[in-house]
Length: 205
Image 1 (cartoon, rainbow, N blue to C red):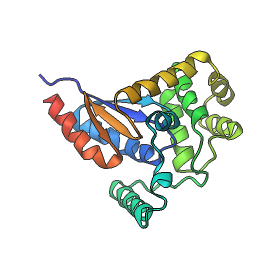
Image 2: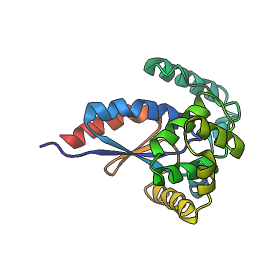
Image 3: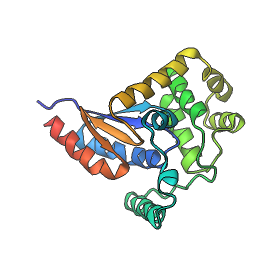
């Protein structure tokens, strides 16, 4: 009898690699019979707690490093046919509002629709998703209650859940996004998805 396997995905909308990983994970889950558990966390909070910095800050002065990262992204996009992907011209975007919104949307039973709408807005349409008016318009266009969801981001329980998720992720050893766990095994970066698939298959056997 095969064992149930869960892939925990530590996620923030602000990571382009989070978007790129999410687009590939469903196929990995289907091949391995695993379930993906997307865990909303605040990347800025993770960075602060771990003294980490974004690649632009950390490697901006390393000649050729960011250009190579761009090349790897283009290769990944081509390999997986992610032709809708576009770098967001407003990057970096403060994601506090939309991450709290994801928590609120889940509580309202519309988490999946919210997730896809905001991912598209961020990494396909290039919208400025730290502007509340843009967020409301985006959610309304997706058939969601934009004003209601934005208002719900101020709920103390919503705020507390996002903060608790972020703290728990750091306590597990997370220092950036995208990070994945299969059981206690941690994998960082979209380039580790092959290892994630191998571990999920092994865990299920």
